[in-house]
Length: 440
View 1 (cartoon, rainbow, N blue to C red):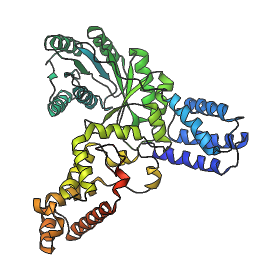
View 2: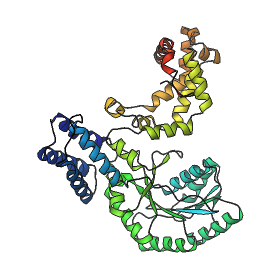
View 3: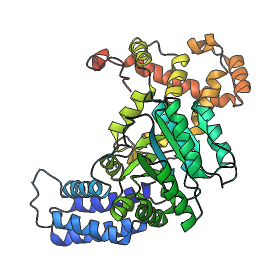
View 4: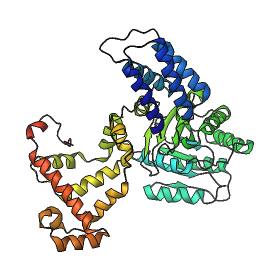
């Protein structure tokens, strides 16, 4: 989402690196470019103005050590101000410390409330809690059914009462949860295409009969400044406790994410980074600022890996690589593990400098799917001993996977090159690695 802003800021910092030292003039010139980049990214005008003023106040007149590049010095100041703009520190969701704890999800129609409700249920389930989703959106066609389908996918209880008003559904859901030892009640509320009194009155009534420990507003990051206005109005009427940014994986300019906290004073607590239910993560201002400035986010990458990769399997894989016994069975296993971690472009964006190196290169997820299809068309013997794959076997594998023989040849060539690289590796390089950490 922030790729355009990141590129423009990088150009500004490159100019500063070319300067021998920081002066009031080159700082002001640079900040003018930064402000333009922020406004083009759809950041609120007042927010951009205050941000530039804060950066200039810290940068002008500051002595820079000879060992530090002027551009690096300004990047540090901009990074710190971005962190402050986004909230300073991560603010977690209300702990699930009583039974039941209640989270209510609100927002405009189409912002992603129903999907977020299911995502939060999966998030709680992974923390060994017992969640239940409650369908209180009785107006949007198929909203109740959509939540039921999502709840069934992750095997969590779904609660709804036909021909009943949302506040009463919520009240009955709390009673049911108390009797059935539910840890977390997640209430999916109705939205409208715009904010109106009817919507707000219903939400206020629901708050009275089923007081939520966390009232989360879903803000669609792709709607730009409208998301900020919506967040501000909801917060004034309902005193929401936190914002969740949805569709952060989209290609919008991302200004809403940089403006919401500053305009509303309401913390951003979570971010939805993809369409799939596991693609929800806590919002960390410092990590987001690092991503915007192209500095990567290794901490989030490691956390994703820890959540999805089996440590024992990783240790076995490392042993195989060090002994040069890596085969297509192992390759397939690694591909499946990687897919669990989320979209490849998102993962690459967390690696420092990867954005610049891969600029202009489109990561096509279909290439991975094509490779998986080819490998799955091989027999077990062929996967374990790829050298046995001759011309006739290649034709059979190509036909079975719906690919060309050329694609099969290309995959085999890449695999053998990788195998050779592992064989040539000096084992001493990996003696200091913790057990289970992959050497690539």
